[in-house]
Length: 113
Length: 116
Image 1 (tube, rainbow over the protein chains, first blue to last red):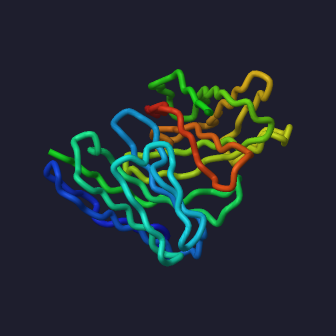
Image 2 (cartoon, helix red, strand yellow; image 1 turned 135 degrees about the horizontal axis):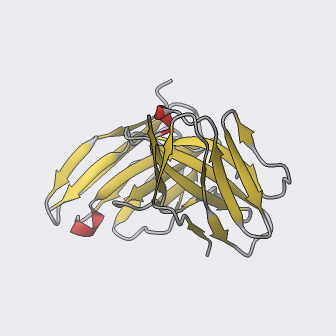
C-alpha cells in the first residue's frame, strides 16, 4: 500500500495564479481531510469529506475549494493565490469513527510570491 | 470552540531519560478524543497514542504513555527511555464527541530534541 500520496511536493506560485493539489489514498477510507500548517504552528483543517460526493468546510476554508468524485481522490483547488496561502498542505484519510487514526500524506510545500 | 494549548515550545532530554510533554485543552463536551501526533524532520505526521475521554485508564503504547486528568483538562505525554529517533515535533490534538466528522484541532506543538 502506498497510503496517502500527494503531488506536487513543492510549488511556487505567483499571486493570482491557481493550482490544484492532488491527494490520493489506497486504503479505501471514507473520510479525507485537508490541513495547512503555517510555520511554528499546528495544523488547521481546511476542508473534509465523509464520502464521495460529500464535502464540508473546516476551520480555514476561505480561498480554497474541494471536490470528491471518487473514494480515492480528494483534490484541493486554490483560486487566485495570495501570499497568506504560503504554507505546507497535508492531506489525510481515515476509515471513520472519532477514535480512528488519521493517516497523513507527506505534504506539499507551497510558496506564493 | 475547542482549543488545545501546549505551553512548552521546546524541550530537550538525554538519551535513555524520561520526558513529559504537557497539553491542556478547553471544551464543554463530556466525551471527546485526544491524540498525540509526532512530526519528525521528514514532515510525516505519525500517530503516537490516543485516549478516549470516557475511559479512566491511561493509554500506553510501548515507551509512550499518557496522564489524562479529565477534571483538569490535561493530557500529558510521557516518553520513557528516550531514543534519538524520538527527536521531532509533538502535537497534541482533540476531536469532539459530537458531530459526524473527525475534525482534529491541534496545539502549536512542542519541539523535542533527544541528545547523547
